[in-house]
Length: 310
Image (cartoon, rainbow, N blue to C red; front, side, top):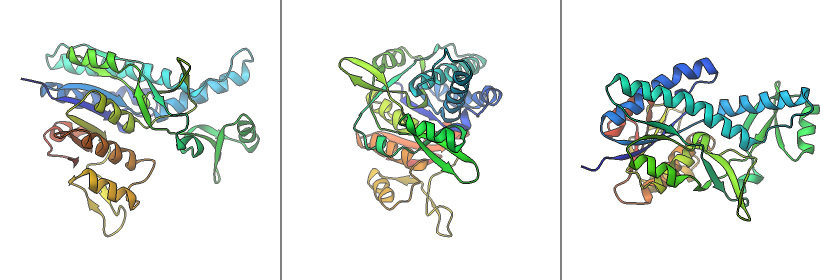
């Protein structure tokens, strides 16, 4: 019997923020992934990295300030480092959880590059905040280097970077090979390392990629049966925060498009989840996307929890 192929996207709740928080949080994420494996699924995992990549970026840049022989770290390098250390904790947690259930299975992390379009409109409208708060003088210095900054009233300035859409996944064949060998694969961590194709080589881009869009692209390229986005909310809603709020149980890609056009989904949080799910489902008949709370992975697999897109 053919196994169901699932791409799971893990949000901030599944990883925590600090190193100690992460080591605890990944145990909960591991249980969710193990539940799917125990149900007989092939599983590829994508994860967020927003707090972690910001911490790495800040730490390396602060280090560079006091050590003149060291250069500041580009975003692509920070993304690669976050993939490595999050993957390390996550793969060990999943492996241990599987072993505790009597399941012997290799869990592998792939440092993954994702190609973006240099002409993506996102480069002109950066929205992702990273790093520490800066003074006005530090912010001016960042702008002189060509970077974007934004002021948060009463707190200071922070750098913002673009969030372009993923176009292709460089290491997708490696992911496919491991998945078909029935291994659990962790890939496109943090949305992947954003890179540009330039005359046959790959060059890191000063950007981050939404992990929801990256997981949707990975699910599409792997021809997965289900895209499962695990988050901190039980269901997605429209008219959020009003007396007309309504949770979404089952929606079509066309309904998602209508709600998005009406501004129902916040651009930096909910929209990527809904849009990625709708795009994936539209690619082939029989595909399903589900957005559910982290602890409800098994129920979501059977479409008994979360917001279902089909």
